[in-house]
Length: 529
Image (cartoon, rainbow, N blue to C red; front, side):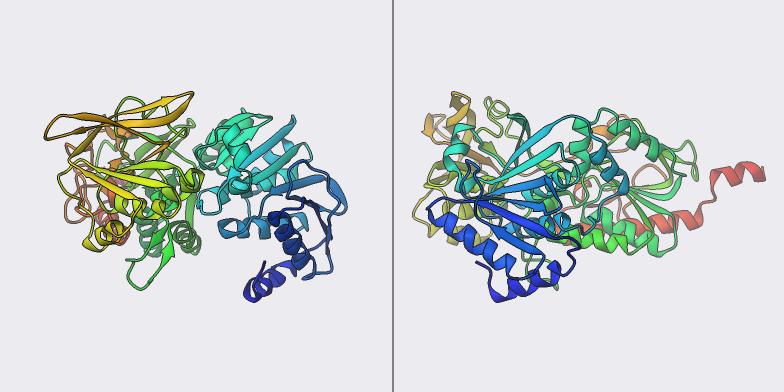
């Protein structure tokens, strides 16, 4: 199961084990069970503190438990093979069970250990999902730190009947004590906030105690991270408040146009950015959602940003880089069948539609790329583009046209997504020339029609926004408010690209530096008067 390079890498990691661990498998006679036996045997052979047993009696076969030999009450179970994007999750589970300390905020660990109640988590993932590892790893950590928490992590492709029976049509999908808990990516702090009623209050108290920043960046995507690095290097006290550090990178798989990096993946780049930010004295406040901006009353004064958890942060200068999100179609049925056939991430949810009929809405690069990727998994793809022709790059169109299980509709307007028994069963598309409508029967709809800037929280702030809701900036990244700058996809910048966002972030950071050195703090002005 593990090639030589993976075995060498895993052996290096297992050298960090402090206590013996046990792998206990429940196996059947199928091929997946044989592969599971092979995997666990190989792992056990790499370190004398790892033992593999094949006498488990769990109903899910194949599955295996990872537990500390001295504390069998703390365990995590993998049902299916945690390979692909989940191999890192497997490695971390082995290390944490073996006593290697997790790199997690100490306060969060104490919250996990202090949770009262019994929590049995089941979570479904796909091996191609780049959002799933965060949930897998958070639940793994919780189960290995608190004996009243269990986590069973299920590879959906290995348990298709179970996936169908529970109507799982989007991953990550998490159940708690047998009931749906959440569909989508969740980090450890977010899970705790849903379980611990005091979590938000604790976080707010911690944030409210912070002194004002010289530079506060709102948003942690490529633009925000770059801005913070630039201002921190200039010696200014810098903070980042991000609802989700990494932003849209977590929803982006292959990246092939970042100069100097022939290929990377969004979550990896997000991790690289976080490590780079960590090299500087930057206060990173993740899971901090801004809900209101109160601008300074005079140049040099303190801007205030209010957060959803009740805290407020203040700063002499702000860089707004809150990015954008998937645009909704806004047609009947879209909201009703979200995660029940309506999806936005082809890489995460595509494997759940293996062999089925799906549609992709959108003929730009994102839509055509999604259709190409999905056509390799699903039974049939219908691509629907509102315009009279596709807008994607020629090389992508050529690839799409070469696939024999793809149909392309141009000049088509999707007017409704239909369903029955809680699941999508089709959509209605209108010919924009003839106004003729027809229904296409299918099981899934992937919507890829562009982005919407995250600026709703700025509507009453006095900040100038474009007719599309973007932050209006000049050539230096300045807004109409002194000391407030914008960067990245949330602004009126022409091209929404990672490399452009990074460039805009550096420009906003340098402009904030220029503003700070030329503007005397308002408090000092008042004292001098």
